[in-house]
Image (cartoon, rainbow, N blue to C red; front, side):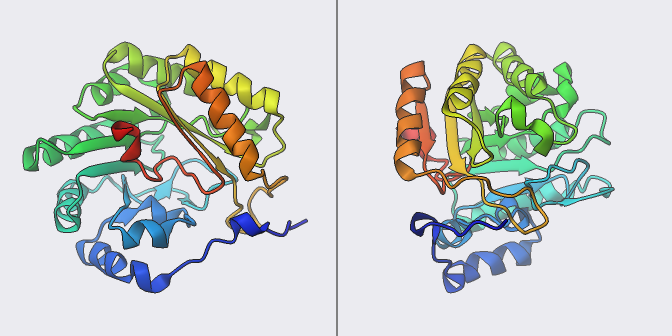
Length: 281
């Protein structure tokens, strides 16, 4: 059954507002998760010259049933992505940069070296840039995680996505592995800011969400994003509930009480939405 969106989720999309950023990114030849994952905030962010760059290609080796990113056999790593990220950041005038990737289980380091090279190139261009990396689990490769944690990024995030009971939507992933990845990031560099995100609307109970928060704090996760899951199409995992805005506010209060340093929680929150606020709050 396709549930009708409530009023608070009827966000207007202005295609005119994002046209310039769309054209700029196309001209450079760099992808964004905003486009590939059909993010509902795309016109808002693009109109503000904000974007989350997608590296390691546009094809994921896993098949999460909530995600709109293409899945299959990816191409070889394109080293030119690094220069394209720098060029896009320069032309967009970015001071806060977010970089994520598809999951690349075919690569020995999960693609960690590409993240490291991007940060190095960006810092060479402008040492004052604030950089956030949103990484896949890198197959829990300790050496790869250590390199990412110490590459000079300000935030390294890995999304837990949902409660353990609903990991049927994260094919090929493991809740405990994701927690261990976040723990390894912190153990590799105690000064790094770590971040995770959870989506609501998959039938989770409040007690289950709070347990996830506690687990994240147990691995010293600093920042948390909480948003509403929206099915990209009828072929994806269906939405079971549209969580009310007041419940998002309640989760934010509970998360802050548990010790998260900054929490963004609202129906339209996504892991990289308004990313600059996490370091400036």
